[in-house]
Each structure stands twice: as C-alpha cells, then as structure tokens.
Image 1 (cartoon, rainbow, N blue to C red):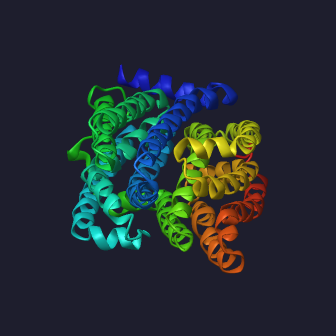
Image 2: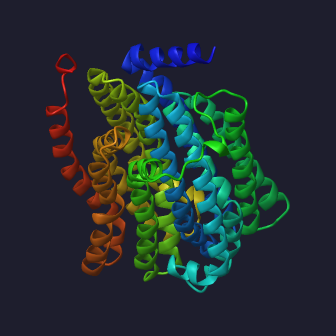
Length: 452
C-alpha cells in the first residue's frame, strides 16, 4: 500500500501537465499565504485603534518574527527541497531522516530564541528600532510571540515538507485554520475584552499553537510519505549540512529582512512615530499583495525540485516560465488597482493624517515594484529547489539586504523621508537587473533529456 501511494505521487508530480500542476499546488499555498497575511493585517488594524505608537510596535516586532521565520524557513525549505528530490529519486528512507532531523532541530532553535529573547527583551526591542514611546507596546507584543517561537519554527518546517511532497492542500488546512482563529482572537481579546496589544499577541500565539497541532497531525496520521520520528534524527554532517546549505538562502533572506526592518525603523524613526507606523502599514499591504506571487511561486517549487530529481528537465523549464507569466499578470493587475486605491488602503489601518500622507506616497511607489518581482521570485525559488545554493543565497540577499540596506541609508541621507519611501522600489529594480542574467545562463546550460 505504501509503495502504491509513493508511485501514485511520483506519477502525479512527473506526468501531470505542468500548468495544471503548478496551479493545483499554487492555489492552496496562495490561499495559505493570503490568510496568513490577512491575520497579520488584522493585528495591524486592531492595534491601530490603540494609537500611532502601538501601530509602530507591530513593525518593531515584525523584525523578531522575521528572525523566527528565518530559522523555520531554513530548516523547512532546506529539508523540503532535499526531501522532494529524494522522493523524485524514490529514496523514501532518506526523506524520512531529513524530515525528522529538520523538525527537531527547528524546535530546538525555537526554544533558544525564546529563552534568549526573554533574557534580553528590552535591549532587543531597542536594537529592532523601538522608540521610548513604542517600547512598552513592543515588549508586551513580543513576549507573546516569544512564547510561541518553538511552535512557529516547527510549523514552517511541517508546512514546507507538505508542500514539497505535493500536499499543499494539507498545509493550507493548518495555516488557514490558525489564521481564522487569530482574526477571531484579535476581535474577541481586543474589541470585547479590551486587552489592548497584549490581546493581539495572545491571539497570535494561540493561533500558532493550533496551526502547529494540525500540521503535525498530518504526519502522525500517515498522510505523508516522509515521517517525523525521533529515532530517525541524524546529526551526521552530511545530513545536517544538506538541510542547512539548501535552506541557507531562506535564512539569509529572512534574516536580512529582519535587519532591513530594523534599518527601516531607524531611518523612519528620525521623522517620528507616524513615519514608522506608515512604513509598517505599507509593508503589510505590499506583502499581502506580494503573497499572491509568492504563493504561486511556492506552488512551483515542488514541481521544480521533484522533476529535477527525476531528471525531467523540460518540465522544470515549462513550469518556470508558466509561473513567471502568471505571476506577472496577477501582480501587474494588482499593482494598478493598488496605486489607484493607495490612500484608502492606508486609511483603513490608521486615521492619523500624517500617517496617511506618508503611507500613500510610499505605497504607490512600492506598488510599481511589483512589475519587477515575479522573475526575481521564480529564479530564487528555482535555484533553491534544485540545490544550487550559492546562486540562491546571492539572489536571496539582494532584495532584503545587499540592495536594500545601502539603498535606504544612501537615499535617506540624500533625500530625507523621500529616500525612506522609495528605497524598496529601487532595491527591487536592482534585484531584477541582477536576476535576469542568472535565469538566462541557467536555462542555456540546462541538460537536454536526450543527453542523459
């Protein structure tokens, strides 16, 4: 029975038309990404009712969540990519070893983040860009996030293994359920029980625990090919390094996102809490829209890794260009709509005139960058999925770090608040210019199947 399930999954990922396959795997992932971002935006919405400083605290704690995501994605994307290629090569035993090792290492690192986060909570919030007025809110919110850190890290691993196995719908169930509970929790704890920003933090922590439990149940009840077993954990260098090196681009991308958020908060902080709040709202809205492209791209990842492992290179190429064109179409349309509605979108989250003024312009400029992002996302996900770790790491470093950090520092010094507002778009254009030659070179040298 087990061999029949494995063969059925192999045939599904290697014979289904790639356009149909990417859509089937991308829709659940996109829904998961959207719901996840909706509940993040719900936090921003409800917290925004408290005041401008509380809104700024959401942006500060986002830097902490980016660190947790960095660890989770490193083990999740790293383990998932290796698992998918091993399953493509019909090596189930090694896939289980990778899954188990990734999962338990993520739990361990989540606990370490929790412990050190509480020990150094105040200086940590300062480092992430908190002002004196934002600090009390940031500490309350961050405390709840730290409690949930081990579950959040592990959830990213479980989610990505499910995706890379081609079972994105199972991952969607866990993430969507957690997201809905978070939104309800925000409303109950903040609106009805008047618990303030601490209510938002508790709602997030509880939703993460529930999401983790649902995702783990998929493995316990035998819905996956790879398994989570503590006796299958291996600390051999070859096993751990394959996970870490493959997932390193995700660690770099998310880690730099945390650093970039900190730099953004400091640069915006020179112009007061309204600037921090405005840029926090802009980033939340943009990432919500970007989640559509990211969700489609994550639907592409298991198709790329599995078929690359099965040496079906034509399918890898077809899947890449289909994903790119679909992403360009959807993000382009959303960019046009978003530019027209920017003022209304910012106003939903905060009615402070200064926040709306700063956020409206920044949002319009960042929406322009959506036209440049699909090729960058697809190229980065392709390289990470097939194990080209050096190229994937370099490209991952660009948008969130190598391009963004010097850009915002230089532009802020030259143009003040305007530099803060336009820096992400400039960084996205730089990332696009660098990504295109990598894409062209890869497909020019991709082996022909008749040469194997």
